[in-house]
Image (cartoon, rainbow, N blue to C red):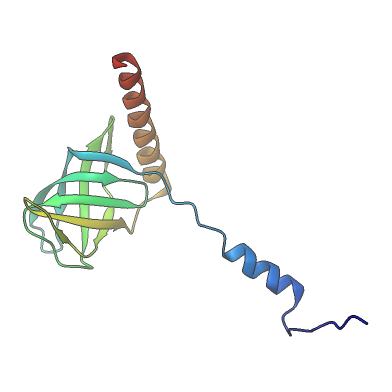
Amino acid sequence: MEEQVDSGVPQAAAEAAVEERKPISRPFRVKLRGSVLVLLRLPNRRDVRAAVHQLSITGGVIHVEKPLDEKIVVEMIFHIAGATIRPKAQMLFPMWATQGWMQPFRFVDLTDECREALGASLKSMIGEAAKSLATHA
């Protein structure tokens, strides 16, 4: 005789828990290695120059001479593939690099229009890189 065990968890809740464990897809990232310069406008209205090391539609990593305070929100201004992007970003914990600091950030106030323009610019950069690799191969 088979015995059924009731775990007290409804079947739908158990299936939902399995769905939640699926890996969340992250947006693709483009490694720019400092080829794009960015102007950071600090809350006190000072400007700091940096180079974008890595970028996605959710944030990225910049290379700065001196680290910025963690959690401050700055305005970023940069030009990439024909589009000027002016999002607000929150600085995350910096990491020491050989020359300067690598500081990750996340966008906090990126409009849908700006997100689409950034995504299109990053995709076009990937396409151009693939074409140049194919011609040099």
